[in-house]
Length: 304
Picture 1: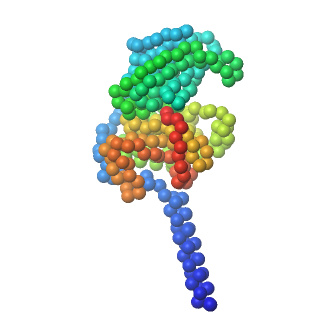
Picture 2: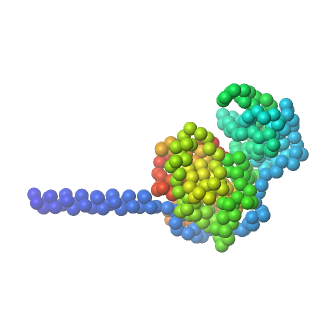
Picture 3: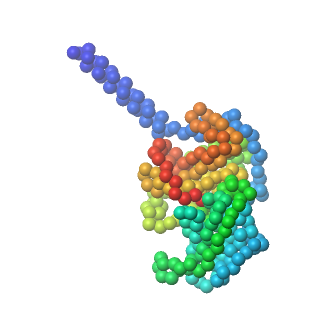
């Protein structure tokens, strides 16, 4: 009887040790902590080579004071500017059952990414009638044929908004100055974000009732943000390195969330724990990794 009890106690101790060991592995596991090896060398770009959108007004259409500039639709974006009437305005990009809504300004062009790639789009401007009620003021039907389906993920837009002077952009080139491959650049940028950006619990409470567009300089300076800020920072810092990156919003087990997917061409293993399949997208979530790993489901809704 005593012998049986000893066996049971020993088994319980083993189970407990295994459980603690598993917790430690799960809590501190980070596939990017091992420096990427066996990855293809790639060109190192300079800050002056950042891809920035332009609105040359070569191909335009004007309706009710709204100007549509489709000159660069082949690169994955169009420009739109509303009339200077002081009325609050929105613009929507529609393809199939997906609708993206952005603010529309009077004094400058708004860049509209065509996030679903080649295909037929409806772009329409709206003006405020009362409170949250809007009416359509102009509409454009556009068939898009991209020169490169990945080009959409190399430019800034209203959600991932940056230029050469953005602090995180400057840092991106400092962090990767000794990197020789795309995977090394992903590693270096990812590591900096999850190490240096804290989760802003006060801001997340505000974001529950208000749609908050990421402010990259603000998140960089304060060294904190919500999931949208984490994802936008990483997206911007990788795009300026000419690494196609898309910011995803959708649902995880804890609730609505934002994460990142990046495209690495012709790359295999970066370490035994994670594999980027050749020419496919893989998910990266800097928010959860900064707090601890997440092994639940991801349900994609919108891409920026």
